[in-house]
Length: 424
Ligand code: 3DD
Image 1 (cartoon, rainbow, N blue to C red):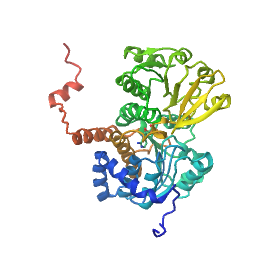
Image 2: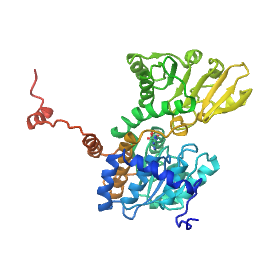
Image 3: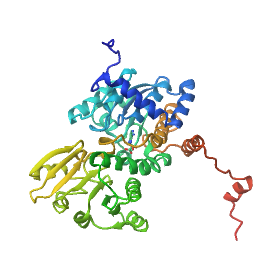
Image 4: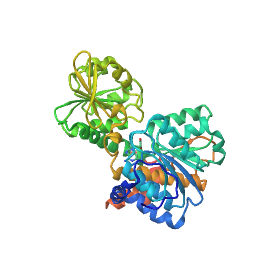
């Protein structure tokens, strides 16, 4: 029996650590930017003395971020940010590596918030969120902790939206950097990461042929755009639903059909919500769907599909495949609900590929270092962006490590850029 590990933790099964370490090793081999920054920061230790409480999906990529934060000098406590997204093998490996972690797949709501509270017992000086549940817990239940917190970071669109609303209400108790809004995150993770990982989740849960299917994507923001284009690449007939006329217009000019959800419900074979809004697919829509329609969500929270109303209304529910429930409707048709309406990419697959999380998490790392060094967040308790030069540093590193070179402006071109007296 392994000696009792000192750091407090609660994971599904610590004996899974060896398998989890292999997953982490694989992710490290595909996250060259973060590993290069780790090599630099383990010498300079910019996070020395910092205590970081993190609430973010426990995946193999997150483990690489966690271990990079430790290499940079921080003490770290961690929990998941979704009850269905924790990879138990990775969580076991982190615990075996001495990380204070409270996370396992399939937590109930009480356990989920218990884990966040355990992470906060650590009395952090920095917080890291994906969906703002931890920072909101500080503000709503443990405001006394805020006096020791220098700042926080937020990973996802929905979380940033929540924090901007708090900022507008002057409710923020400490400054936060919106990592999601950094171009090397949202132009890549949200588009290419969500696009590929959502279809990955759908294919693992259904094993269907996507070619020729009517795939309905609700929401044509960065995430929906990624999903629509990846589905198109696999031969699907993509239909987009939207409430924003600009995004809808972009979808039409990309060649997608655009219509109301009530009309798409009648013809769709696969439905994917990516809006961040609630009640996008209602029970009324589900009643009119074709027999065999597959329904899932890739938004952060499980509010986009009216799952509770659907389950109350159903005449029968059975799990037909992992993360795939066959729901027989009183009208006789069957609906296949994936991951119980929670984010399908992380609940039914492994989330975004390592290569794209490499940039997102380099943004997290540089944001935390900026807060610790006081170079960002000094103008009051508001939502900040990662400085452009740091964002470009990530992009330049990524290009270099992918083997690409780009041109540089000549002095004359620099001058032209700022000139106004040269016309045609
Ligand atoms: N997210 C997606 N894939 C992830 C992965 N492999 N590890 C950790 C988190 C992961 C969620 C992110 O896309 C986050 O940026 C978001 O929710 O926007």
